[in-house]
Image (spheres, rainbow, N blue to C red):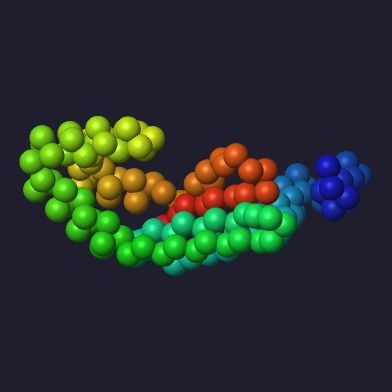
Length: 140
């Protein structure tokens, strides 16, 4: 319990303030102690326009930073174009990707799924093998 909250409760116990006044003071203290929003939370609300991938790592004792910003319109167009590809070709491309170690099924890619993903993607941290590396994926 922080010191200010304890002081309010002490004043209440001593009868210097009412329970209602104590409740109001504690509410104000809690509001003032709310941690500041992160930089990602301060981005404008509304429809996201970009998918951002940021990689911070250390390679050979030197910092490495990758910062990719992809317009979501490009992704949306790509998903719509993928819907025009014949299912046999998508299955063949998926098989080739799986052989290369990329377990992604192109036949399951649907435009409405992309919109749902974008709506729910606030920020995601991806675990990587290096302890000094960090990958962030978010929309802005």
